[in-house]
Image 1: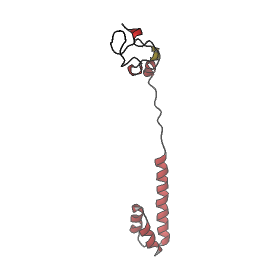
Image 2: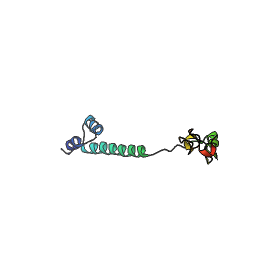
Image 3: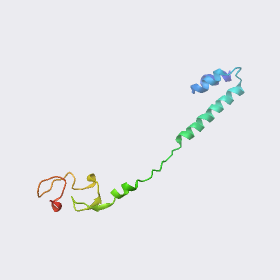
Image 4: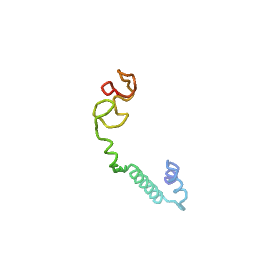
Length: 106
């Protein structure tokens, strides 16, 4: 009766199928199958929780672009990228043209 109760009370469908497949299932055999299934579940969870961090090599050419230089549009030193320039998207107060300050007005 205990063996039947274990088979019917198992929440894991895979373990329940394994128990139902076993011929002449005894209490000892039932406990061994349940312990093996639990051990597999614990080990699988440990393997899934491990995180692998990938280290990418920095492109040497991209390092040259990331240097701070004197900008021709705003007269400040910053990384030479359009979106980093404080003048980008602004209008010049002198000529009204976009993307430069009055101090660098052509």
